[in-house]
Image 1: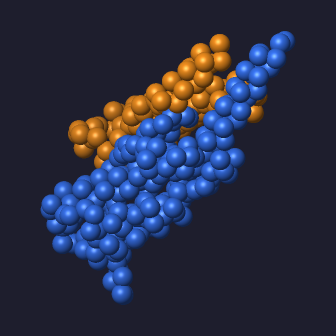
Image 2: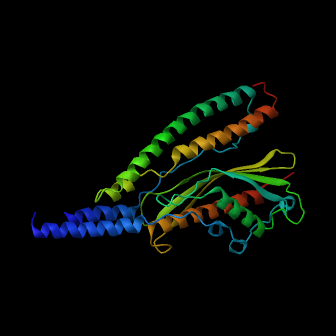
Length: 187
Length: 116
């Protein structure tokens, strides 16, 4: 092996190490605040049905995963529950101040479809929302697939970009769920 | 040679190893109310079978991803191996969606007074 080849291999190794570093820093879980749907950011085109106002709560969230720092960013149950509860608060739907929760919500996070590499990273969350009425019957059963793309301008590091894509996808999912609630007709 | 390898890796990063498109079965579907007891039972049985198959496949994908995670530490080839990791969660999403679908079909079955 001559010196030119050795130098070229060394350059390649440095380039690959930089690339690997950029793509694989320690992963952190999705931030509940970033997954929360801000009421001001989503001007309502249609009001929520009156019976739902101050009458909803999140009863259970399942299907989430804790993030392994050596793997990729995920969304856990507690983070999702916080994000959805805060979003309900912001929309005036939460049962609070002594009001009973007449419409409990169960959420099943079916999974996140994530890319393994890439500059533009699109994550699609697949979530089942189940809303029950006061008799215990399901009155909204929504299966929502919500894609969101995070670009290099959102975050340079791949792991951070994937986290932002996860958060954006859950935010979009909650937004679509709220649209379903607006179109619903509670008893 | 090095430029070619860098080009391939760069192209991989630009294009992105996008996740496969996954469409889970919806919990509630048009026409559900019109289903009779036999039709409900048939759907529930078919969904249970498909769910079990998806769960088996999901385990295989998970094991493959663990192996690829270890392989991603290999110098030079590592990023390419990491890029082939399947994070679409297709099998998991479909299995869980079928379980929820069956929950709804079972509810409808009870509402209709079906014996099974």
